[in-house]
Length: 282
Image (cartoon, rainbow, N blue to C red; front, side):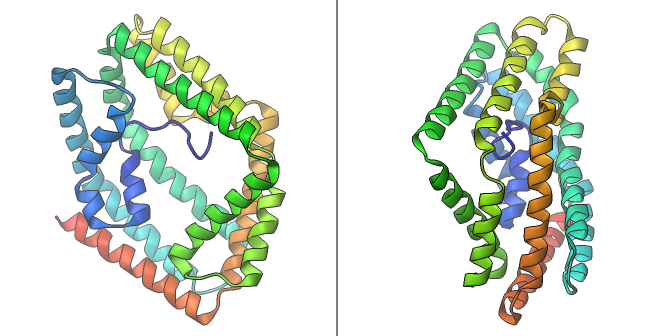
């Protein structure tokens, strides 16, 4: 659930575009968001106009209010990365980035709830049916893959993500990633189960509580902004354990950077800062 947590609506693609950090993607974010949401909800023409206006408003707010915050964050991170970072420092920076993500949903949810409340029963049925299809696909894929295959996929994805920032990894760094993947494995089945519980609450909220706008808005906000409130204690503990192992990995990788990798990282972050400043000025 964390990697495909269905906070799929609203402005998730904004942060996704910044992680790829291309001005082109950000400038077409309105189209991308509509396309992405359209995969779950088939709006009527009037609903689509309301949604498009909402997206435009959110993008304008994001460009004006949030991009400067990202710049400040990246400038501070850039300076911090010039020295070895401890796992505790990595955790602090990670939690700051989650605050940015959460701010988007906190800003958007009141209007998004109004849009949800205007959906017809058929649109709700279709929406929930698509979530169910996704759930079944996740369960099927999990059953098809061995534990070792999942470990390799996780390692590959981590290496791919790091490569974008620091370039090609060396054998020692790849070994660290393999150890991390093995230490944090075995949670995918639990993630699927937690997502199933979350989806069941979506079903209740959207099918039974839309007649009470106040209750619906409260529950929908909780579902999309704080989905971890539906996780059980055992799963929360495993997530926290994996978080700490991941912070140690990032700290170890950062401290093992070669001069070439460090130069690549600095160049990448400076490029992001440049893009953010240009986007904010438009």
